[in-house]
Image (cartoon, rainbow, N blue to C red; front, top):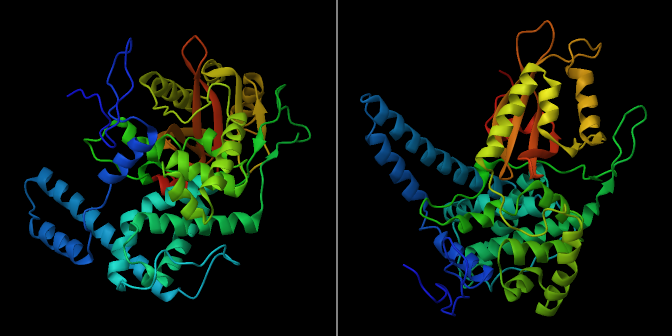
Length: 446
C-alpha cells in the first residue's frame, strides 16, 4: 500500500511527480539501512537450539520418498555446519586467546563497563550470527579475502578477551563492528601499503592506454558467502552486502587513508550514523564528517567515468548471455569471437602479477600466445564454469595441458560490463590465481 511518510522515522517522503515504478518507503539511505538492520537482527540463536534442531531434523529422515530425503538432509547439513562453526569459534578463541595476528593495537578498550559474563557456547552462538557480515566488513576495508578471514578470527579473539565488558547496552552487532574496525585499522597501520601504478614489462605489448592502478593484495569475494537476506526483502535490502562489494569500488577504496576508508565504509556502506561511526573510531563527529568530506571526492576520482556512486549494478540477462558466449569462445579458442565481446578500451589485470593490458588488440595479442594451438607456447585446451564474485558475473577457467586428460584450475576472471550503445560488452577483466577456487565451491580439477 502506498504511503506518504517514511516507514522508519515518519518524515514525509519526497514527491514522485513524473516518476514511475515502485516508490521508496524510506526518506533516506540511513533510514533504509536502519530498517535493513532491524529485519536482519538474529532471532535468538543458541547452541542448545541448534542441537535440538539437528535432533528434530534427524528424526525426520526416511529413505523414501527421495525428494523429501534430499530436502531434509540439506536442511540437516545446514544446521550441522552452523553448529560446527560455533564449536570451531569456541575452540579457537578459548585455545588461542593469548595469540594475536596484529601488534600494537589501536585500542583495547571494551564496549561497556564490566558486567555480564558470556559462557563459551553463548559467545560462540553470538559471534556465529554475525560472522559473515563481519568478514564482509573486513574485506571491504582490506580488499583481501585471505586477510578478511584472518581478521575475523582476530576480531573474535579480541571479543572473547573483552566479553566481560559486554553488557548488552549496545547491540552485539555494534560491539563486534567496533572491534573489527579497530582490528583492521591495526593491520592497515602496520602494513602501510598503498596502490601503485603498473609499469611496462620488457618485451610485452600493453596497449596504448594509461597503466591502471596496481593493487597486489586485491582478491575476489564469493557471492555465496555474502550475508543472506530474507526472500521477502526488497532489493535495496541486499544493497548493504552486494552493491558496495563490486571490484571497481573495492579497488577505489584502497586508495583512501585507513581512517578515511573506515569512516566511508561505516557511514556510506553500512549506513551507521555519524555518532555511531565516531564511537566505533573513538573520535568526534566533527572528525568523522571531515574525513568523509575528503574521502568521498577522492573515491569518485578513482572510479571509472560510468561509475560515480554506490548504486547497485545487478547483472542483466544480456550480460549473462555475453558471459556464456565468452566461455564458449574460450573453449573453442575462437579469438575473433572473444574480441567481439570486448569493448575497444577493455582493461585486463592479473593481481598480484605485474601483467596488464589496455585495449582490445593488446588483450587478444596476449591471450593468442598461449591459446593458439599453432603457437610454440600453446598452453592447452580450456573449459569454463560460471560463478559469481563481488556481485558480478565471473568464470572459472580450467586448462588441460597437452598430453594430459585432466582440466586443472587455472584462473578466475571477474567481469565488469559497459554498454557503449551497441549492447553490453566486457569492459574490464580482473584475473585471479586459482587458490581461492574452493572458497567459491569450485573443484580444483575437472
